[in-house]
Image (cartoon, rainbow, N blue to C red):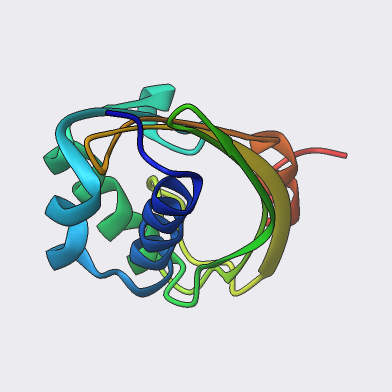
Length: 141
């Protein structure tokens, strides 16, 4: 049975709230146990399963405790949600082996999220990771 547009968009809003708050206890409500998350900021760019994603999010929030995603626009059809967003954060702790820089970052991205039976089964995150590193002062200009 197909989910309504509002149901799948609500699922993505809850997913983003987990990113924003570190609401790890809510992951089983929104992320399928064997989901795949493609994120240029993750080691190797791919996270397989809920546990691997949670470990990545914990590391991200340790390095960027104020990490926040703001939704600019969302479109959905047939269980697929496209989300345009802006992320902001301050690099206050170690992330991916990079010591804190205390720099503030802001970057835009898009996500293509597939939802089945009210759970995310795949999330493809697109953003310029080089620009992210550049804002942290970690690239040569």
